[in-house]
Length: 423
Ligand code: ADP
Ligand code: ASP
Ligand code: MG
Image (cartoon, rainbow, N blue to C red):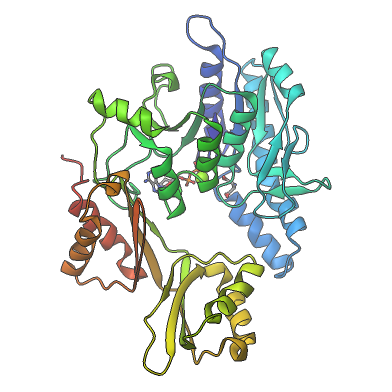
């Protein structure tokens, strides 16, 4: 069981979480379950801690940053263990270094490498509930690491895989995965199931309900995932075992659900948006072998993730424009790196724009059907929304637009693909 920040925000909420954990541990008909719980920091806490780091030292040492931001989860894991104990349950907290959750060195975006938890498994068998702070791990040299924003989802999947859990339930503030962010589109529909592949794509283009890495890990390790709400009125009546949330399933399982009439096959499964990227245009880049390598090598060396890349067809004078996107947080660094190499690359001007959003439509149905992209372009143009760049993959089409038009674009596309819920 994993509980996100809003589920852990304060004593009252933690008490409700403890109730859900207790009910799950009690099981049905006297068959007790072994339960491991992964928790996030209280809502807003990680942002608050990051701010302290910024104030202390804008060029903070990533290792010390991790020490600070990992503390939010330490607090909630202890509090949940205390609350469970107050309900008469046996429970203890297991910090990342105590389990241990081994990660690669890279601070602030560490990846889980291995979890071997014989000691914890033993206590689970003996009926003790394990409460684990998400987001945090320990590096080879024994230092605290964190796994990037939203990383508790990944902690939960990694723990589930390590202990061979029957299921990994991700409790959050919405009752499942929707066709789009239900906070933007009131007519978004809850999905009974989504395939790993689609969820992976949706998460990577901005549907923050699950961290991207948690989905790829679940897919690789075969962890059964369910997204559901912790904001239920009466936990005694709504059991997670009834699978009322959204299940993340394999394509085979999805096919079976469609055959049984439990799911409908849609051309587009969901729509996501991402306002965290920035656009960079380099003008009049020499149209010759090696030019783009000179642009992207320094960015890669600096671990800056480049997303969309568009190179225009060369003009007469053997010059071309290159457009790409980077995370807004890395824009200043990217710009400085490119300015430093102006002569080597040979560009004329560098133009940047942070006021952009990426809107993506995702669905495995696209593999076998034409026309998904053209529907998107038509729907956006009918509302006068200008497309600045386009990229596609097997099951996704993404466009860059003006950030101010994000909500409108998501709504228009949701309707255009027939995803709106009928009243
Ligand atoms: P937690 O703190 O529990 O980890 P998050 O805020 O990280 O919760 O993720 C849940 C949020 O994800 C929801 O409140 C919702 O606004 C957002 N979200 C974005 N896209 C989707 C989607 N397709 N389905 C459900 N929720 C979504
Ligand atoms: N607390 C961390 C964050 O806010 C990790 C998480 O909640 O998943 O990003
Ligand atoms: Mg989250």
